[in-house]
Image (cartoon, rainbow, N blue to C red; front, top):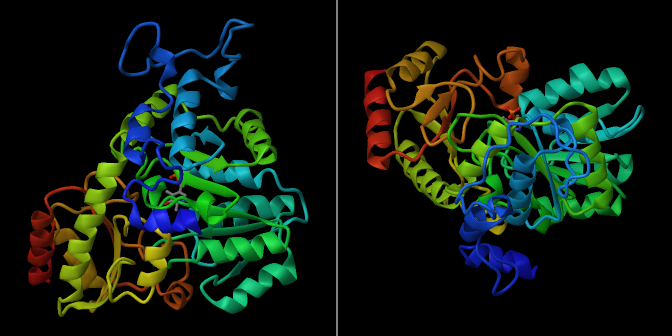
Length: 396
Ligand SMILES: *Cc1c(COP(=O)(O)O)cnc(C)c1O
């Protein structure tokens, strides 16, 4: 509990008094590889193989490279983890975790799940006998399912995509451990700055580094953090045995992005709050989801486990499909594109993009209607973003 109190009050998210703060660790941890030359930045190790018997213990880049190790040290330090393992994408990180299961094992997953995670479960791992059931973890009754079903893994995201449901990680971790299971938290929407799942009791904290951690929409990557030697061995094994390794270039770019994670996340959150507040008062808006709006029903829970509200705002307009599409075309700073978490603002229309393959009736029952729009608010000048939204709304 003491870690949570600090989490809430101290902008640097510290658990150990006197230890370097988050923004300092993001810049200074893990750069031992440049010692001999004095280079401020780590060199890029474009090598597929290594001379046997080298002091770093490297042998082949599929199973490790100095650039991976560098990034792993930094992310582990940011998330207060003993171990971090990097992968070629967020989906590769998910594949690594699920590949450690065997036929007959059960995953109890949150029903509002990232589309590609759902697809991996349903179209890939089910073929190999991994069972997956979906529940609404914001409903306390669903917590009892953990004790009753005793799954191998409990799988959640918080906040979720695209509805930004905030789940009580500490509480779910508690139920998970009492059932002898492991809790996986996909931390992509919050980022390591905003939320540190291992401190809240999660066993694995997984992120698509493609999003906020790299932050510039120029590379792909994934990472899994843990404090368990058993999990670490499984993940290192998956990295090399399944060929899920990233490229040295992508890990180098991700590390470069992470150096500015703290100021970027503050700016994303400030702008997202401005966008959410503007939209909330607009007559064409039916509802706004942003967990750090004081009026949001999950504000207290969000405050308990998140540093700030991160940069995603989800809005339901009072529009038809045609009007929604017109609005999206009229925006100029918000580019209609998949993905999120970059410095530039993007906008996504789940019904025709990320959730297009989901039948309309199912989408609607999940709350993903034709007028639902997800904004990934960038770090531009907030007045320009609000003016862009106002102009586009006026034209619909
Ligand atoms: C994007 C995303 C992923 C997948 O990451 P990739 O790097 O695109 O493979 C997983 N989970 C969430 C929540 C995401 O937003």
